Amino acid sequence: LAFGCPGVLAVLGLEAAAPGECELTRLLQDKLQYKMRLQYMKHYFPINYTVQVQYEEVLRPSNITRLRNGTVSEAALRYLWFHVSSQVVLRIREVLPERHPSWKYTQELCQLFDALGKEYSKYRQ
Image (cartoon, rainbow, N blue to C red; front, side, top):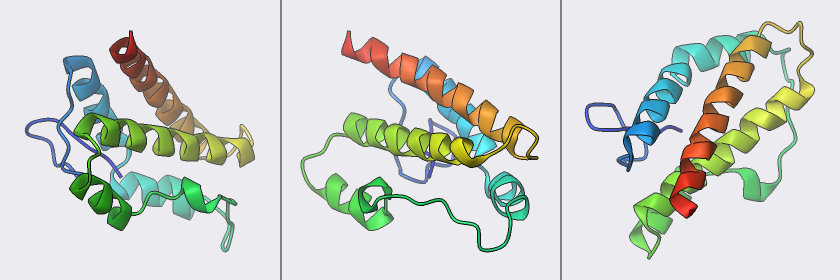
């Protein structure tokens, strides 16, 4: 899942609040395009390989719709997407050896999520 800024396709339909957040989400959206996810997260992984996750770690579109129709703010939904997505990337990184073809891709995703986390920490201050 990805969200975007004006002029960028938004899967969640959310607008980024600040220029720094907007630029980072644009970069993440480029990295998370289907073609790249398919190449790095499917083709380079062994057949039937799975990463164990808890039920609470899965962000489903129906849950997003339910939250959006409730009292959850757009900013809270952006942060939820960030938190779940960054944890997924970290979980994948835990199982990848450094020589794996997807290592650099996941490293770049981690760096972008780290930078986005720093943007979000500015909002809390």
